[in-house]
Image (cartoon, rainbow, N blue to C red; front, side, top):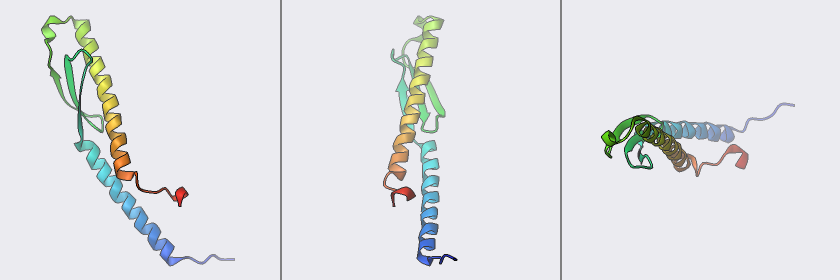
Length: 108
């Protein structure tokens, strides 16, 4: 027995696919544009990171010359960890904003 193809279902599926592709392109562009600024817990190091994880800027806002090498290294590592968390948070937020209202096929 052959199945009939419902033309309206096919057209709807194609439109849905195109919309998902457009949303994906918007999302990919947005994660490269959105920036988050984080600081190390001691306030010495500040990083600007995009949602895709790229570090855009590193600033020393405290007085690095009065810190030992290991202290400065800890501050940099803490800022990098915070930047990674911030980038992940920004990606998740953008994803929710972009695709949040879009129903999955399983939900139909």
